[in-house]
Image (cartoon, rainbow, N blue to C red; front, side, top):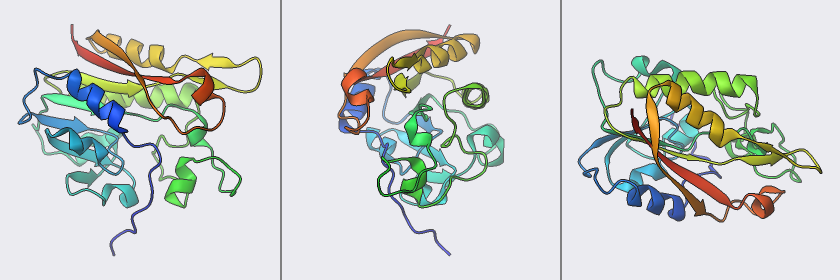
Length: 216
């Protein structure tokens, strides 16, 4: 039985898609590209020969270039020897989207969008902290093991708790992981996006980042 498609409230917006294309002028559209957290497949609009891996069936089913799979176990879903000339991703940020709150009064989060809790092995409900970091260290290792070209990352810091707000340095963490994996930052561009217009972050953290990494 096919899953019933559900909303995904944190897809690539037009500003992010434009920024990724502007940072990849040297990459032919015929390049095989991997999106390891594909969601509903908005990233396929970039025009590359793309393949998306998405754990949640309700989201994966919304694009024919998505396959259902776990980024921590890419060898289980991708053919042996399949390589990619480009990868791009917008992982979870470890912010309030991770809340398990189904109340009507609650702001948008992955659980509400799915209509259920995310699958075992998902990063959707990982708040910023140790588990989040351990998960993404392994996720990026899995991706770069199959990567022959650049990696484009869409990421953002966020503010946590009440006044005085504490900044979660999510961007620095991901940069550090890619550095450890043998990649360097060759471009880092702030992108003003609509965000979701509730909570503290639209006021205090209006820009998201697009970072291009290449092997050192």
